[in-house]
Image 1 (cartoon, rainbow, N blue to C red):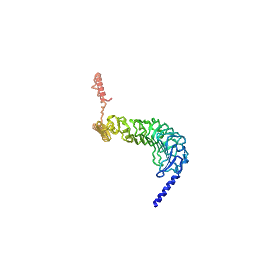
Image 2: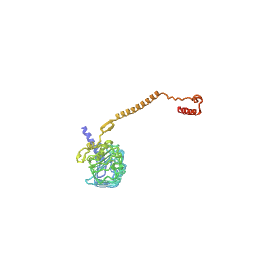
Image 3: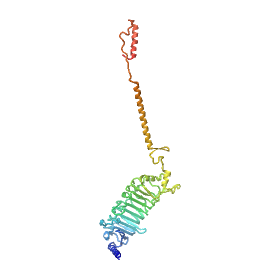
Image 4: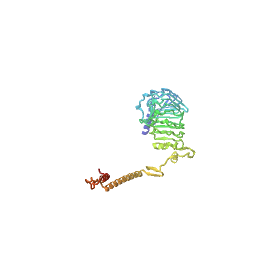
Length: 399
């Protein structure tokens, strides 16, 4: 009986709280699990603009507009700049969801979302939508932007004035742009993702891509996860695709139609070198002789140049690997050999010099007086003898 009374009191408390909520005509209030509260409004039934003062108890932390097929002109939301953010529940990020009818269109203007700066997550679903320049700028920073279903036309400045970054004040700090399960009208305009260069995650999944230009993400230096899954990307991706994406950790290429040649699968060793995890089975689509083969196996069997040294540091000479330790040892032995040869040559030279002793030079003294005179002989003979003696003295080296 006591339990029944408690349950009854709790029921009336919830009903009383729910009945206390106020909202515009054409909207309804849904009290979900915990402190998560949803205001659901029907396009065409609710009168635009939606006014902040029309929602109360609780405040409009989660607004969902359904069955859209028409215009959301400038000033479709008014007064929301007065939102008391101290009253936000931490169970859900402040969210705006726009859901179109099947085949419905959503026509936006650059100022359609004015005063909605407190919103942190935006979802557009099943709409044929053209995003004009600066359309998201009134939000300032979003934790997550999701566009799915329908058709999407992007302009070069569609994301101008917007920052997408993780917001950890509430739940699920994502920092993500998600575009999926829709038809992309035309290609990505040049520089379309440049304004959101701090985005951590970009998912462009099942949107009909058959090729991708490397410049599309060249400025997204903060990118951590990139998913292009379920797009029939044909042949390969540009060789500079990963340039500048130094923070990239995850790349999903599920359903790519790889043409396996050694030039085309350049991205496999590059991803290994950069520490990028490849998600999804990378499978060769052509040529026919390798169709169905994993790209990893194709690369290893057809492209990888295996060194005879394997994982050993060394120098390959033909089919022989000389480990670096051997090379260092041989170098030391060679240096020691040269040192020994030089030392031996010096020792031999010094020993030879010691055995030879000092060199002595001798000189003959001058002849005794009268040595050249013989018995007072004639001048002719004496002159000849004197001349001979002079020559002899010169020959002996003294003067």
